[in-house]
Image (cartoon, rainbow, N blue to C red; front, side, top):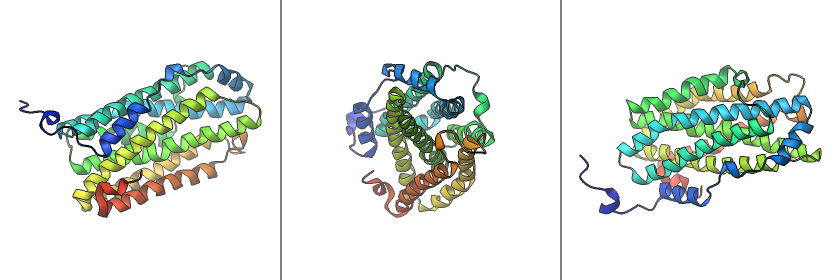
Length: 291
């Protein structure tokens, strides 16, 4: 039986999780309000191979966003059971945002690309390994094992690798495509506006994951070996996903995109987060100042 309420006993604690919550409220957006009319015309004017690459990228995003929406709840429950009210408040916006990302990519595929369903063949073995096995296993484990070790493994999987490497590399793909389209006097403003919103949401998600890991490292620096072990498992799969995106184009990807560029970008994004985590070994959550 609950005997008291944190909000009445101590009030809300100002700090990193609550700042993320307030930022999420200020930056709220609605996928249903995006105007895709110009995007439809631009997409139809593209060569078939370029359409296929965009379709492939968007379908992988849609499946991934569905996966993270479904898999987040165990972390929300874990934080709630620990009585971390401010973190739970933020995670309510986190879950809503993941649902909005599903809506956005579903709208894009149906209204711009003219595709609804039948897109599962775009997912390769590395993609299925991460989103079909490693991600759900890490999050579902929290239902029976909410230990700091399990939380670190879940956050490394979800926030550092899935969001911090794969999603951010995918956004870079869309932005590079936009540059190529502009050179062809084509534009997809609704799509790019949606991608910018999704990227901003994900930056907060990644920041929370880094905070969660840093909090645990601050309490137990020995968890660093857990973090390293999880990364050693995940990184080959993540870079494999990037390779799978370009695998159908052995003679060169459409619109001049190159797998080497995106593999390098993925590596840079990982190194940036890894440096933050290295600081967290000694500083704990203070390592996130300035993020």
